[in-house]
Length: 138
Image (tube, rainbow, N blue to C red; front, side, top):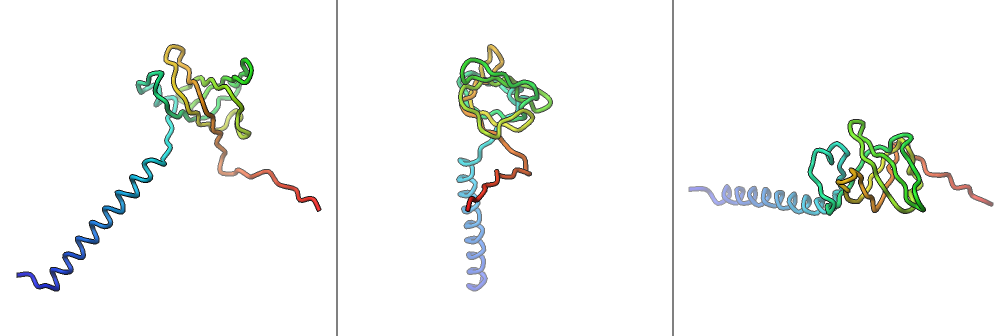
């Protein structure tokens, strides 16, 4: 026979463990919707994507690969230093976009030409980023 005091402690421990488990579950479910992962060119070439799959491609902009095409359309190569992929984008680029810097592009793959057709470009900066100084006029 278990004493009532000991039985209450067991119930309390079980309630605590269930509460921690539920809290962890709900936190992970909330983060799952907000985590934004990207694939590198090597991962894209290793996987099987068709032209209807939208995903994010990330890596470094290869030096000397930036080409201006017609109008606002540009082409550049994203590399992860093992594999490369050509990206085509039409639109205005972010201010931090430059060669030899990080970039994340959202779009889909054109398998016939081995090109990534981007709909959005996000430029990444390094950990030493400093904002432009604002001069105060008196």
